[in-house]
Picture 1 (cartoon, helix red, strand yellow):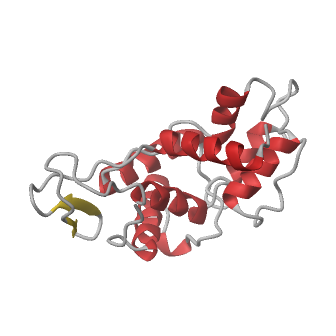
Picture 2: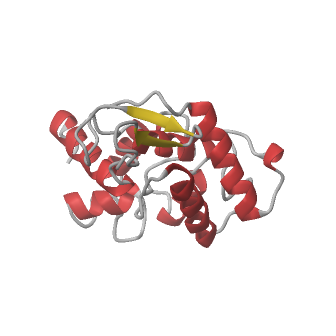
Length: 187
């Protein structure tokens, strides 16, 4: 169910806040197009801290694994990353389909370690919105459909006051890959 309680602008601002606090940088220096690694100087451990802050703010579970790992798990070793740790044509097709065509640096044959540098503030914002859009139609605790926003960051049931339980990021990626495979027959 697509939710309309938390806006993209609100998520974007919260993502910027999480990044600024984690990296100890000025929030105003962060743009939607900023690469977390290339432009803002994030390192791999910083991603964990940023994700944790977003999970706490929105009551969600971010993906623990990158989409390439899920492709390998679901479609077999070598389907996303070849024996030389290079991205395959099929993986590029899926990533472009998922993230849009606005990643010209993404190409078959690039080293898999270069892919995290493509993560931008906007793509992280989109990831949070995807999870928020997994809002169930009804509350799992009471079965009512009385969702409401609390402090513009959390969604809870107006009937029983339980917070919404969203699908976690890894499960959303797996569901998306399954759907794309059924429709596009990439693998």
